[in-house]
Image (cartoon, rainbow, N blue to C red; front, side):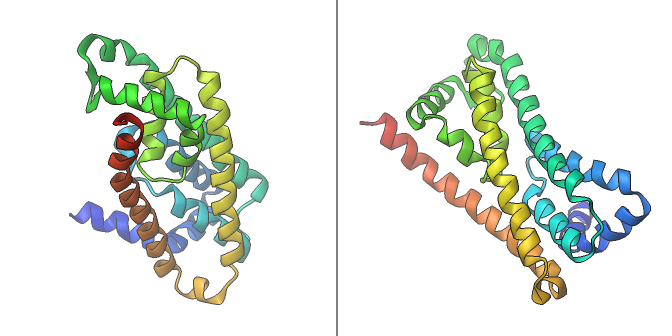
Length: 219
């Protein structure tokens, strides 16, 4: 419980921790932020990491405090996200044989992988792009795609598009709203709001999951 409270405290007051870190350890500040973005989608066990909050907060501080170099920060976010998705795809590809042998891998059954495959085909890859905006799903989709699809090139093209739109959106929000006095004064509340919105988005997506499967596979 204490660890969770400490983690939550760092997220709510991320601006207080980032500024001194960047001033004292500029290299490690970029490294840590990039590692958070990378790890959230590279490994299923780290899907809880708040990459949306990190992008918004870092770009807000970049404009208000002038403590980040935008020519390093923003490309680093993009590269870290694409690399994380690619690693998760590779892990899924590595475990394909286990799916064929046992009919499932971890908590994902072969039948659900086949359904997911059909959804990707029907959507033309739009599902891969949109999943980038949904917490948890942006971690699961690269893994599931690696298990069920042959072409990394097919995935990479759509994944890069999704990452580009996602990173641009959250960085732009941080740059635009970071200048507002209310945001500067109540940065913790804004961080909580972003966390709440991402959780709400994930909840709505999970509720829609059953509807989507029924729509496509129970006709």
